[in-house]
Length: 109
Length: 115
Image (tube, rainbow over all chains, first blue to last red; front, side, top):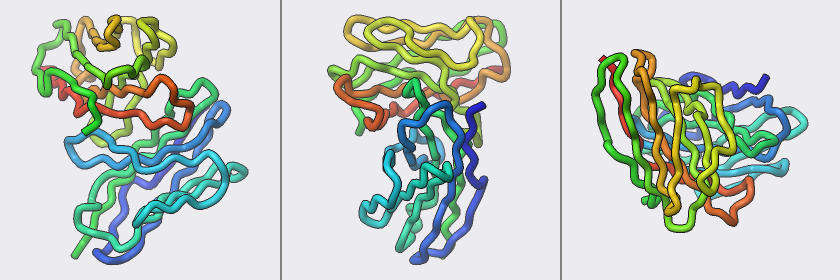
């Protein structure tokens, strides 16, 4: 079956760095998305990886290892507004998104 | 601002009733997907429409149905509502020239509560 696993909740301190991990099993693989979702709002696009390696975009970076079925989202210089859920979604062979349940990130001052 | 508009924003229904949710996507976006997101969960794929035809469906019963219109706006219809249908319903559109790397642009969702 298809499955996306990510931690349910993480806590970090303002100004610090946090890494949110995601492991995936999909029927075929056409890339992996990371989305941010604030409570009561729709998900917003953060990153897309299809090749192995690290993609950096400002304070946020995303890494992919296809051989390990593994990705992570790295958030640097954490700000209070980064408190949100972070959703990992794999793209299967039919270009359908398979979503994880999300990681709730709590930022403390 | 994603250019995807959903209506209504909130809705309360009772068990057994029927509901229609609406989505207007960005101009030219001919592919739309609908998702159900229960509280504390990730979105669950319901179905996808491309040029007015359903071209993908998740594990949802037939009482979940949809339509896409020539202007690419779409509807999600749910019959015989059940308590477990209470969720946030999200519509997402994709640019027609996009490949698998094109992000889905989400509307703000419709919060459906079943009493």
